[in-house]
Length: 405
Length: 185
Image (cartoon, rainbow over all chains, first blue to last red; front, side, top):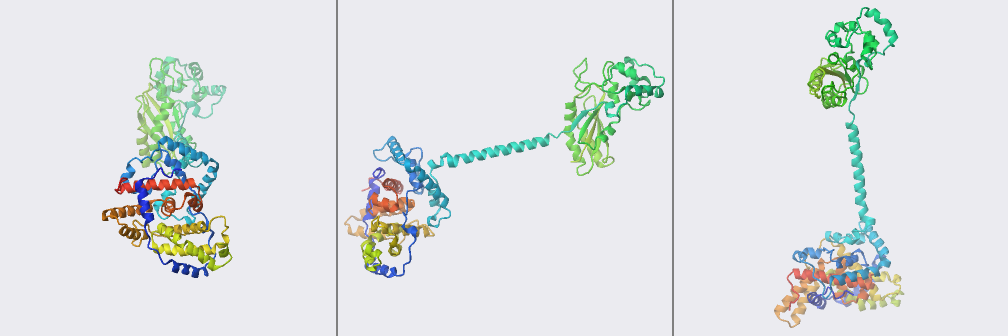
């Protein structure tokens, strides 16, 4: 079939020289006698010796590959002659690439009937290779020769699914890792914006509070809206000028009028920020935004005490106070450093930040176990780095619970 | 063969004398060592005698013995711990070539060229894979037909033809790489 295609006169002549060479032969009669003498001691021969020594194998599948121009074969012989390997393979005499391809196809069709069996045999051969002593590989070149030819590697049932499965598993792993990472990062402090009166003790009902008002502030004059700023600048007089009725007229929302009314004259209207933060110490870390008296001082006459942070001033683009998101971001950016100050401690501490209208932290007060320790200074310096956008109010305070890392 | 199977040692001795020369020649080319070839030839007949009861008569006795010889030769080659980069000193092929060159009546230059070419071929055979080398030796050097080689090696004639073709193609590349040209002599 292909007997003459790869032949050359050079090889023919060399083969003829070797075939025609006379070998130094032994004394065959003596050899025969030796053999006859050894027959008596011969045992049963192994079955493996009776099997075909080199049955059609995976290597013979290389015919199709070798005939195809796109699949040049690299063998030890070619590797030895490097110059020859670099040169294009010489075409067999009188055979074009198309003819070679057709011959290969014809061979393949003829083998279709046994291809499945051959494939199974090839796989079985490969699986047996490491354990079978009769097919011990003499050297590395032999091992390379026994590898699956390129055409077989391209068959999807064995080789192409593996890498895709690997890629899929890797992608799932990466996604899971990223999700875990995000979930860890998203543990940002909870920010609850709480008006002062809401963080105080439960407010009694209005009638009860109204009943108490005369006892605490018997001569409270009525307050007009335009008087508020002035009165706020004098906190000691605040209780005297605030009545539930006045607050109701001012449209106080979210605050109990009674909670304000029961406050004694001169007492701060809001609950101290530290106490609010301390109350929340046992809870998960959170930041409590509070209105302080300074913020209240800056209120416009028509402003409502329950103003949400996102609301803007009527005459400008600057918010009265930082928004929830801004406050969260500002504190969150420095909270990690603050937490590291008390790393290893069993209990958390609280801090109150006061932002100036420029957005910078003007003061930080620390309370809790860290008070009086170097950790307090560390926390203060860490929290002072927080920044928010400038706001209209003179100041703005935050209570922060700092839990140890 | 039937007599040999019935246990007659003399009958098997006749088989040995009939086939031993060819078996020795085959093993010499496969093993490239006359001493090893002699040992393997002896072992071949001893093993064949031990397996006579399993000879089913479907093939020629020579084919059957030849297969045992190839198996033993390949086992011997695989058992070698080191690979050979050049022919050993007692290589019967080289000695035979020298003897042939002296008696062939060729010019010294031609004899030298032939000797170098034959040595290069022997080296090239050593670089071939086990399958290609064995098949080419059986067909190209020992003179078996494709059908006979197919029966011994357990594969179709087409496979034998391809192996021979592929071995020759590689050998041509190898010889050209060693400086031998197609139009030499």
